[in-house]
Every structure is written in structure tokens, then in C-alpha cells.
Image 1 (spheres, rainbow, N blue to C red):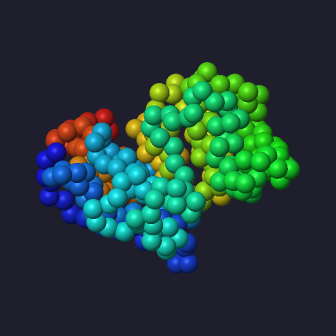
Image 2 (image 1 turned 180 degrees about the vertical axis):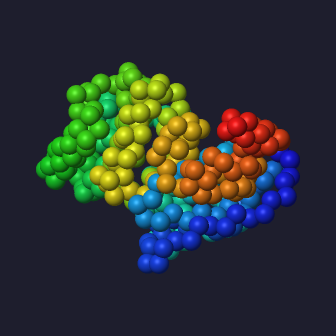
Image 3 (image 1 turned 180 degrees about the horizontal axis):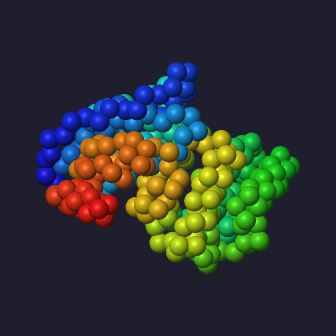
Length: 285
């Protein structure tokens, strides 16, 4: 990766009294001599739907891995509702209210649809290890409750008729829905979606866009989305942050980002922005 001289891109001003769910300041991650992420800043207001985009290798998934505790940042700060979470373990961060999906679907492929979601609910099982070992009446009643809650939850995602099927046998789009359902069963306030439209056909992509809007309203979520399909990003995100070579190079509304010269060059190479402008002028004549 080459070193670039870039000016910092300021965070958008938040409205007075707005609750900030996630605040990332001066976040960096180095692997040996490689700066995968450098001085990354991001502020997510409550209930916002934000896109994080950039060319392959820009550092987007590394940011997700730091937010969720998979990687420890080299420097910087990550706060959830004002509370520092920078050095917490992944399970602690999940319990505090952050859930995620992955670019490559990570279900339990040989378990049923029902059990994939039941597993997420077990953090709120309400019985002890003693109850579990001895199969007490408390264990039995709580397990029934969990099953009923899981079935109700699957119906929200139109998967109730698939509950006994093995997860790996579902069509690709339904596997994605199941992964999102499992993430939401942990009752998060912030959901990170890592390329949810990867591998989807056009019809599945439209369904996914509708689903993301639906779950934000239904579960009162704040959502941060990594996605390469510009149709998805431009169609559902309110604001977009763009990375290249580990740094933020632009942020703004979808309209701002579409016409930003630095973004065009990051995706298409040097001189692409000038060619784009020349084409627009020619087209308007």
C-alpha cells in the first residue's frame, strides 16, 4: 500500500440534543509496517443509516473488526453511548448492544434455522448451569419460552416455515435473512452489516433493501453498512463515509459522494474525475 498525503475530512455536524450511538476518534490499526486504518473518525447519531464504502483493501472491514473487538486498535478511541469500549472482548461488546453480520455468511450450517437463532437468545436464557445440567423444571420452562420467542422472531423474517430446515440448505437470500435475524436476536442497538448484498441477484437485492429499512424501524436500530453494490448504498443510506488506503477521503450525502472527484479517482483511477466532467459537459451540449 502506498502512502498518501491527505487532509482530514471533518465529521458532519450533529444536531443539538442528538444522541450519538457510536463515536470513533483517531482510530488506527497497524499490522507490522502496514497502516490498514489511519486516523479514522466516525460519529453515528441514533437511528441513522450510514454507508461505509471504498475500493477493496481500503480498511472498511478492519474498522468493523475493531468496533466489534476482533482487532485491538493500535491507537484511538471507540465509544458506545459515551462509554469506552476500545479494549473490550467481542462478547462484552455484543452484550453492550453491538451486533454484526459478515461478508461471508457465518451461520451454523448443520444446525436448523430455529437453532441458529435460539443460540443467540441463550445469552438471555434465565437459567443457571445447575438448571441445565439437572434439567430442572426451570430449565424446561425457560427453554420452551426461548423456542416460542424464536418462532415469533422467525415469522418477522418470513422464515417460520423453514425453522426445521438445515441452515446450509436455504437459498442464499434466505441465509442472509437468517444471519441478520440471528444478529438481531441479541437485541442490539447498533447493527453492522458487512456487504449484505454480496452474491445476491437483483430481486434478492431489492428485498434486502426493503428488509434493512424494515428492521431499522421495527427494532429501533442504528445501522452502519459496508457495501460494494452502489445501488444499495445510494438507495438506502442517508450519509456515506468513503475510505481509501485506510483513510477517510470523503463524507456526505449520496448525491455529494456521487460527484466527489476524490471518490471517482479512488474507484476509477487518476484522471477519471476530469474525464467524467468532460463527459457531462459534452452530454449537456
